[in-house]
Image (cartoon, rainbow over all chains, first blue to last red):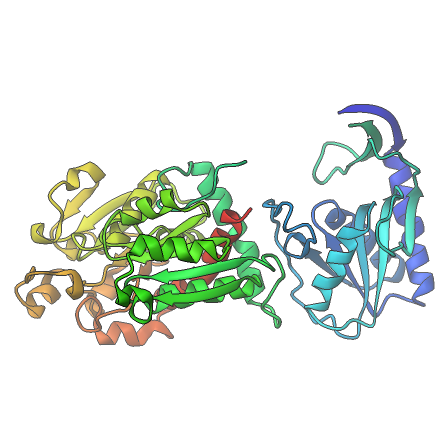
Length: 177
Length: 308
C-alpha cells in the first residue's frame, strides 16, 4: 500500500473533535442524556476523545461503550470475519441518546450491523452517527449526523486512519491499494 | 479451497493460536451476559450434534452455543436412528452429509474413530469426546477457566487427581496444559495410570497430600465407572484416604487457588459433600459451575472458528 496524500494531521483532528463536540452539545441541548459507543477498533478512541471533550465543555461525567460488529456482519456466507474484538456496553441504553462513533464511513454496512447490535441491548431514544471521514460509495441508505471531513475517493483508494492510542501518531491519509 | 477446519485434538494448534482463542472467547462470553443472548453470526448455518455415546452437558452445551450464534442445530442420537436398523455409522454420516449440513459435532465411544469420520466427510468435524482419547473442547474450557483466574499461564502449578487411565479429559488437558508451559503433576495410584504414560512427561504423586498446599489449580477427575471393565480401586475409604478432596485438605490450599472438576461429580468420592456445599460460600475457589458456563462461550468460539 502506497501513501498518496496526507488528508488530516494531528492539529486538524484535534480541531475536528472540538468542533463535533460542540455540535453534539448544541443539537442535543446539553449532554445529560448522551451515551457514547465506539465501533471497534478505531471508533473506540475517537468516541473517548469526543466524550472527554464534551465532559470538559459541560462539566459532566458521561458513559462510553465499545461495540464489535463481527457477529452482525451481512457477508457471513462469503467469509466470516474471524478477527473478533470485545463488546462492552455495561449500562442501560433504553431511552438514551446514543452517539455512535466510527473512523470511516464507506458502504454503510458496518453502521447497519452496529444499529442491529445496539438494538439487541435495548431501545434508545435516538442514535446519532459521528464519523471522522466520509469517503462516499454508500450501498445502503445511511448517512452521518456529524462528519469530520468529506473525502471523495475512488474505489481503488484506501483511507488510512492512524490514532496515537493504537499507532504512533494522529494522521489520516489516502493510499493506493 | 481452504482446508476444512476440523477440531479433533489441539495438537496442531500453536501456543499463539491457543492464546488468540482464549482472548477471543471473552467476546463470546460477553454475549451470554446480555439480555438478548443471541447474535446472528452463524445465521443460515446448519450443525448436526451426532452423539454415539450418551452425554448431557457436552451435548446441551454445544446446542446452546450454536443457538446463541443463530445456527440451526439438529440433535441426532444413536438410540433413535436407523443405526438400530443396521445402517453402518459411516453410511449414517454420509446420509446426514447429503442433506447439506455445514458442520458435524461427533461423540463416539471408540478412541480415535472420529479421525476416520473426519477424513470421510467434506465438512468440518468437531470432536465432542472419543473414547479414552481426546476431548478438545473440554480442555479448552478448562484452560479458559484457569486463564480467567490466572491470566499468565506459564509456570502455574496444577495437580490432576484420580482416574487418569480412563479419562480423555485428562489426556487432552495434560497435553494442552504442558503446551502452555504449566507445571503439571498427576496424582493417582499406579493402577489408574496408563502403561505408556511416560509419553506425557509429567510428575506423578501417589497421594493428594503431597501437592495440596502447593498447587494453584486442583483438577479432580471423575471416577469413570462406566469405562472400568474391572475394579481398579479397592474401596471408597481407600480412595478417600489418598485422593479425595475433603474439608481439612480444602483448608490447606493456597489463597487464590482454584478447584475444578469436569462433572458430574461423584459426591463423597472425588469431593466430599462438605466441600461441595461450599460452592456458593467457598470464596470463589470452586469453579465447577464456572466451567459449565465457560463451556458454552468456548464452544461458541470453536464453532465460529471452524466455520470461518
